[in-house]
Length: 118
Image (tube, rainbow, N blue to C red; front, side):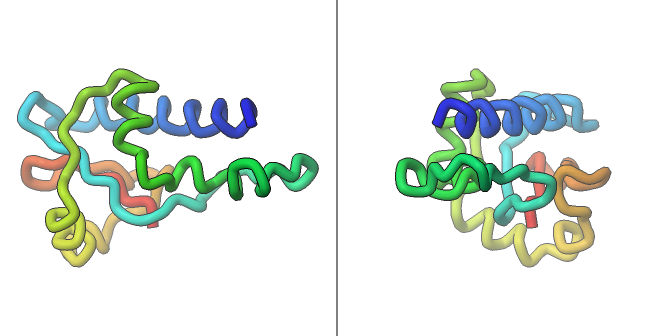
């Protein structure tokens, strides 16, 4: 279980760094994480933890990702609400973005830092 938490923490540490380095990132930005992440996530078939915690990628896609980013990493950025996320998911600019972690998957759109998972 510790390995899965460390994986999720490392994943979001890199993501937080990319958010902070996004051109135009400033105090007025909100964070919008669109979709679920599956790209380049390592699974642990040799360590069956599904009965304890579920599939390891579930920690990256967990409903409480905002708390993970805020409390584990200390990145206190406001998150976009459900209505904003739904609107952004249909925005042509977001649809044209690459999927995380690839180049172009983290961009400033209007006053939001958008991360497109998939």
